Length: 255
Image (cartoon, rainbow, N blue to C red):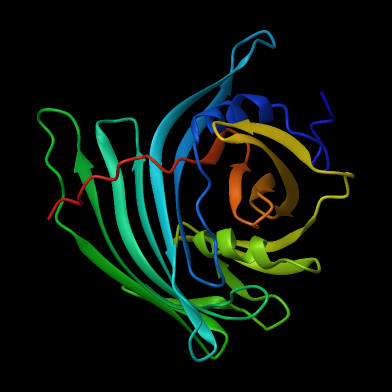
């Protein structure tokens, strides 16, 4: 096994790649419009350097529209189990600039906590919005960010990075808006320095993945593993991963 450092194959790679063996066909990615569904996995290792184990804890469904007027829209439908009988659920429409980063313009989100245990009630939907104005992030309800996001270090929504890495040419510096909630500053996203793609098995045959590496404040190294089309098939963090899962069912959000 290669080094667990950012430019090597992370030790959890093989455990997450097992999930791709059930993927019968990769989504078609044509031009600027694409859609994909990912399972959110918790990735843990047994004590005593045992094997890595994965468990599904949520789903993310992304849909990107075609470019228009120098911007694009990405719809993110997210479900994430919280482990206490509740699931965090939200749907967001994110508008971004059609630049190399996918710099944030604005978003609107509806969210709720979905009860999954007797004695708990789902919450009603709540809405929030955000936009970049004069280089600062303005949330409603909320406040104006103290940090200014310049063209050289723009703010990019976490879910939009699934599109940014498809188009990555040169190293990119940005801030990441994780989950539309937390700003992670000074992110660097670049092609891996490791040579050559890595082959993984899918139900329709082997696929060669190339690697993009993300490092920065507030995150451990994240590796993005892209199909030849550029679509991310796996995203590996510390104890959390996203893996392409076209057949994952997304239930309706409670009213």
